[in-house]
Image 1 (cartoon, rainbow, N blue to C red):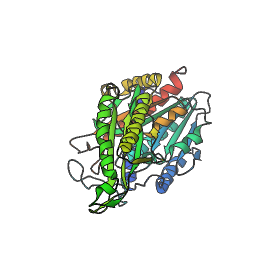
Image 2 (spheres, one colour):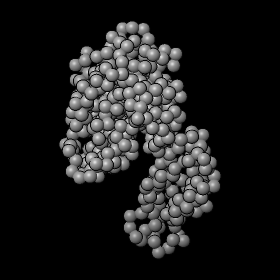
Image 3 (cartoon, rainbow, N blue to C red):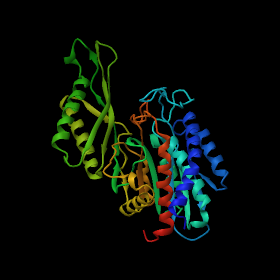
Image 4 (cartoon, rainbow, N blue to C red):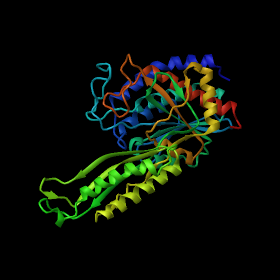
Length: 401
């Protein structure tokens, strides 16, 4: 059995590879479902290790490390897509060292780091294959930002008899190297909001001859603030994040339609469903009071459930971090963003780690999806360590977990 000191030495040896890989991937980002060159780069790295690669529909795929010894199967997952954001040449501190070479596309959420860490984890686990039992699957999921690749990945791995799935998100709101592996809900579920309020168009000089959807839509917005304060459980927060309101094109025409869109975020599934019902009921009744109707988009639905960490797997993962980086383990962190990783619980119990990349001196504390987002590359060894330690302990030391 590999001891912790040797493991830390191997992590240290792989750190230059991780940093170099992350820089390359950062400079060559691709949008969701268009990660063709990214996937080719990743596959070439995997082929060097001699592992079989199994494609799934789209640009995603997975690789398998089989130790040849009976045992459990653990899956380690990364996302591979970037965002349609023009990267700012400066982070929060000043000029950044590396910048995207693809205009209008950038890794502003840390997925470049996720890929680099998983490739390094693959190298390390292949290197200690003789000390392992069972199998490791390495999942490379396309299109996480828009949810385009998760169903294909689930379909691809459903018959692989997976016993546990582990993932990581590098997080700018935590200091470099801090690791959180609390059990229970970690990231919020998301409900897509997108609907039109439909009235009757007319000349702006005679509003009485028209039915103005702008007033109805405004009343809906005002009514929602009261509903959130009075109809939802105050101990189970559901956020109301409306981000778009579109109506009309000229100043003397009352429009026929007004459109509102955004999202709701929640950690309690039942309260999320309740909030969705309240939203739709209030919207329809308020529109009706203004003689308008409502058309909900087909996309308006529960898009993702919360990312939920299995109790036993979280405990196992925390114990592994305590062995390697006892001073880095923190608790009490939840994130209101949403993640397709939540869907993996359909396949097997799962656990999702937060690893901090925020460094004030380097300027890497900007919010995710911000054009000044950056990451401290020195965080990646901690992510690698927590990942491989979990895989080793799950496969070898905790057969009954």
